Length: 215
Image (cartoon, rainbow, N blue to C red):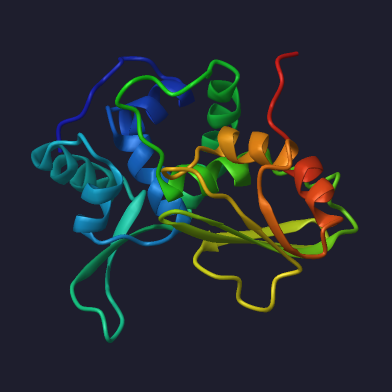
């Protein structure tokens, strides 16, 4: 399959040849949250042309970054998922996300928020050192969004949907639309959320998922 060639014997150049095309990293970002069907990816990436999505999926599959799986019952069809090689990109995606967050203010006109972007931002800013001895479960609820964050001795498991067990704290955010990570954190910090459960874990949440600040 033809791909961009930078003509340099360099690891970064090779990485850009494999995943540097437009939309490729956002596809990887979404698949890092969970496997997606083709239509799920279209819905989660508004603005991507169908031919571009098809091309990127073929390129990522050819490079060994993603793979196709048969959806388990009762679902039908094909799911796209990251391979072990694809999951190795997660630290780089988190680092790029933290760096990009330093250059973000209010959303620009037309920009949207997705559940995948919220989860990946939370995973990217998670401070494992601050959570080293922590075990807690949060559930976050907002319009069109329910996600859970489970920390066990400094290790984070985050996903879409309700918590797998009774959450220690439920944080309910009620804007007019799906909040961005930054809006979610600012509302929690200002007390503009509803809490159910161990209220003291709100401060813990704000500490271990802190908004990046410029150095």
